[in-house]
Length: 544
Image (cartoon, rainbow, N blue to C red):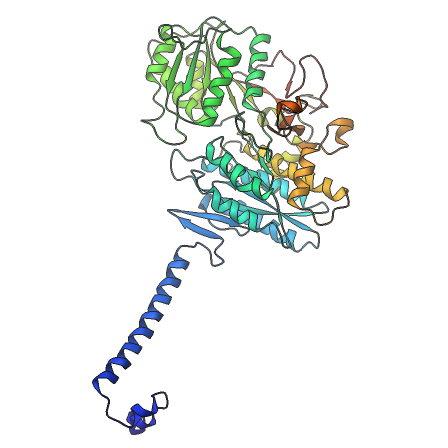
C-alpha cells in the first residue's frame, strides 16, 4: 500500500517529477492534463449520445425528424402500431428473397408511414392497404426467376423529407440487392414532383406511382399506374352524355387550396364541362362555390361547406361537380342534409354529384352516408380506377372485370389477415394500385432477364418500363395488373419532334379501365367501359 503511495514508484509519471517535491507549476500542468482528458472523454460520450439519439435504429437507416423516423430500411421498424403485422410479413418475405439463391433486386415503397394529424398526406388505413397490396405483389414476384426485396422509405406524413429518402436510395444502387425502382408516391403535389425531378431522376431510378392522377405530374422518370385526371373526367363526360344527366341546373364545388391535385381537377372539370354545362365564374352569376379541404396545409378552418352549399341550393342545382378529395365528401353531404334551403329532388331527377377517385371510399359508402343520400335524393357518380366490390361479385364472363383481379383477390385473402370488423380493405383501391405498381416493376425486371441480362439495374428497369406493348396478348411485356392490363406511353409520343416535345413526358397507363360507380343505388352504365387512350367506338384494347 505504501509503495502505491510512494510517488517514486509511479512509472507513468515523468522521472523528474518522481524524485522532487511538486511545485505549483507541476500541479497546474498535471490537473490541466487530467481536466483535458476528462473533458475530451465527456465530449466524445455526449457526441456519441447525440448521434445515436438522432437515429431510430442502431444501423442509422432511420433518423428522427420531430415525432417521425425518416429514411430507408428493409427491417420492420415500428412506424405505427397498426402496421406491425404487415411490416413483419414484408420483412419475412425480404428474408426469403435474400436466402432464395436467386438474383435479388430492391424496390422502395416511397410514402408516409405515419398519419398523426388530420391533414396528413395519407390516412392510416390507406397506408396499411398500400403495404398489403405491395406485399401480395412481392410474394408473386418472388416465385419467379428474380426475387424482390421491399424497402420501407418514409418521407414523412407531409412528404417533406423526400431528399433524405432519395439520397439513401441513390446510395443503394449497387451491391447484392441493388435498388432498381421506387413505387408509391401517393399525392399530386410539389414535394412528390421534387422527389422525382431532383432526387430520383438524376440517379436514373424510375418511379412508378400507384395513385397519382394530376395531369401536371410529369417527368421522364415518373410512371403512373392510375389514369390521369383528364382521363377520369373524360370518362365522366361520356357517362353524362350516355345517361342524359341534367346539363342546365349545374354547379361546381371546389377546394380552393394551393394543391396540385385539386387545382388540376378543377381545371379539368371546367375544360370538359364548363361552357357546355353553364359552369361559370362570372362575378354576378357565379356557379362555383369554394371551400378549404382537409388535406395539406391549413388556410382557415377546413371543410366548411355552408356558404357553398347555400349558393348551390339557391339555384336548385341538379348536377354538381365536386373538385375535391375523398375525405371532403362526407362533410359536404352532411352540410346538404342540415341545410333547410336544399329542396329534395324528385325521384326522376336526383341531385347528382359527379366526382373522380381511386376507388370506393368506405366512409362515403357507410350506412350513415347512405341514409343522408336516400333522405335527400342524392346520387353520387364517381369515375374510379378500381371497383373492387363489383369485381369481387362479378359474374363469370363479365367483360368489365379485369382477368387478373380474381387471382389477386384470392392471394390477398390467403396471405393477409383482415380485421373482420373493418370495411372491405380492397374497396378504396389502394391495395390494388400498389400491387399493380410493383407488378409493373416486376414485369420490367422479367423483361430485362428475358434479354439475357443477369444483373438487372435501374437503367434496365427504366428501359423495359418504356418499351412494353399490348399487342398479341401482352407478348411484348404489358402489365397484367389486378386493375386491368396496361402499358405506359408518353402523352407527347407521336408529336412533331421539331416542336421540342419530350417523347416520354407524361407516362400514363394505356388501355386502363375506368369503371363508373353510383351510390347509394348501383346502376349499370349504359356506355361501354372506358379505356384510357382508346378511341370511342373502337375496341382496340385487349380485354382487361
